[in-house]
Image 1 (cartoon, rainbow, N blue to C red):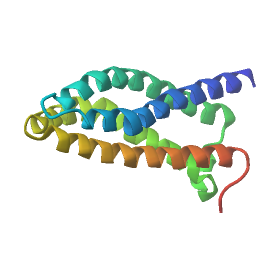
Image 2 (cartoon, helix red, strand yellow):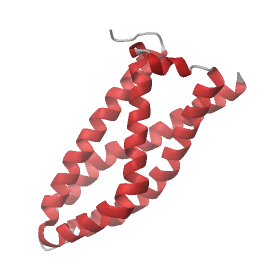
Image 3 (cartoon, rainbow, N blue to C red):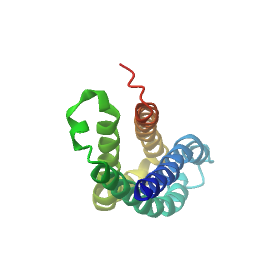
Image 4 (cartoon, rainbow, N blue to C red):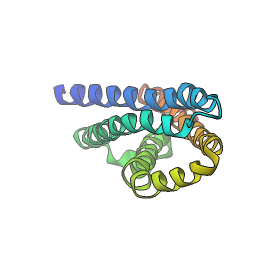
Length: 158
């Protein structure tokens, strides 16, 4: 039982740091950087700040995923993946996979270079696109968190 408490604690702390950071980037950082005067390079400033967050996100995302996997293993609840009643477990796994793919594959191998190239001619447009993508990801994660909290306490929404 102690291991489950420790795993759940790590998992929740990871989610707070990870999704809280996504919320900050989406609702505060991107709008602030987009409002900079044209003579400044808003994309370059965003990149400097976001790169620090990306490193943190990679570590926290790994901790969150590993602790989640270990909880499912320790509790022996793999069959929950076979039930729509536990849709939030599927959603948590999907959100984790999306962010892991973005943070470890797409961003370092493709997105960073492509966005930087495009930002040289349209920095504001790139930031607008990034903000839209962040809003989609944030909305998906908030619905998932709400479902996970309510579902883990017995309320299954349907």
